[in-house]
Length: 440
Ligand SMILES: [Zn+2]
Image (tube, rainbow, N blue to C red; front, side):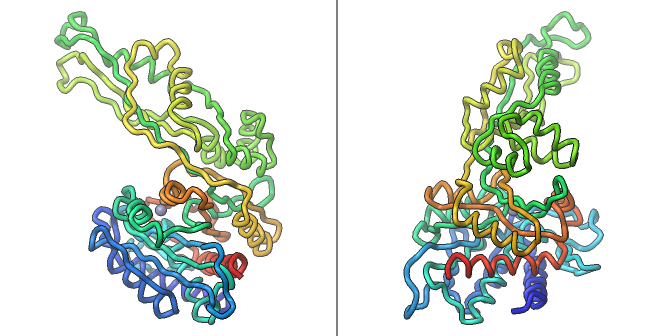
C-alpha cells in the first residue's frame, strides 16, 4: 500500500476510534474494541475478546506463520489502550469526540494518547495481512486493552495475569515516546525503555491544639512544616543514573559521568528540553497536598504534607529515603515520614534486536536522525508485561516527525489534543516495516 493510502486509512480508523467516547471512568470500551476486532478479523487475523468486566473487554489478535514455509520464532506484539482521560468540550476549539480533520490535524481526545497509535498499529497489521503476508518465523500479535488510565485492573494488569498464554511475547511496542525532538542540530527519536517508580509519602508534624486567638496557648503543627517545605523548594537536583538515563545522556553527546554539567549544556542549547530530561536522571520530590486544622480558629495539633516522589527505574525505597533525608536534613528528625504508595520502576535492556530494528528504520526514514533511549516519569501498561514476562523486551515507540515532542507533550491529557495526519501515515509505515524486518 502506498504511503498516502496508509495515511488515509489510518486517518479513517482513528476518526472512528475518536468517535467512541471511552472516557475512563467508566471507559465503556466494548464498542471500540469490537470495531477493531471486526477490522482485524476481516483482514485475516485470529481474534479473541477476553474480559473481566463485560463492558470493558480486551482484544488479542494473532497472525501466525505460514504453515508451509514458516517456523516458530519470536512473538512481536503491538500494544495499545482504548480508554482516555476526560475532556471538557467548552475548553476545546473542536468537539473532543468529533474526529474532525481541520488544516491537516485530526482533533479529539485520544488523538495522541493513544488511539492514534492503536489506529496505526491496526492499519499496519491489517495491510500486511490483506496483502497476503504472513510471518516467515514468529507471530505478529496485537493486544488492544481497556482501562489503562486508571491502572489496568480490568485491562493489561488483569489480562497478562489471567491469560499469560494469550499475551506472552518476546518483543513489545507500546506507548511512551517516539515524537521527534531536535538537539544540537540533530533530530532524535526517543525510545522509551524504562519507567520511574512511585514512592509517595506523607510528612506529618505534631503539636498541641489551642485557640487561634491566643497563639501561645498551643504548639502550631502547621508552622513546623514550613522549614521542610522551604528545603524541598530550595533543593538542587541529585542524580542516580541507571542504564537508560546514562544512555540518554550519551545519546545527546554528553558525559554520563557528569550529569550536572550535561544538564547545564542541555539547558544552554534547548531550555525546554531540560524540563523533560532532568526528572529522568534522579529522585524527584514534589509536594502536592497539605492539610492542617479543620477549623480556622483552632491551632492544629497535627499537620501533614503529601509528597509525590518519583524514583529512577531499578531503584527502590532506599533511594527515596536517601533523597528525603538529604533534602530535609535536621528537619527529618522532627517529622514523621510514612510511605503511602510504593511501586518500583521497571525497565528493559537497551541493546536488543528490537532497538536495532527501530534504529534502522529511523535512519532510513528520516535522513540524519537517530534514536535515543528515554525514561517515562510515569507508568504505562508496559509494566504489566515486563512483570509477567521477564524475558520480554518492551519499548514505547510511536514515531512522529511532523509534530515535535515539544508540541505534543503539552497536548496530552489536555484541551485541543490533535495529531498531524501525516504522522499517522508515518507511524503506520513504521509498524508495517518493523514487522517485516523482525518476522521475515
Ligand atoms: Zn496512554
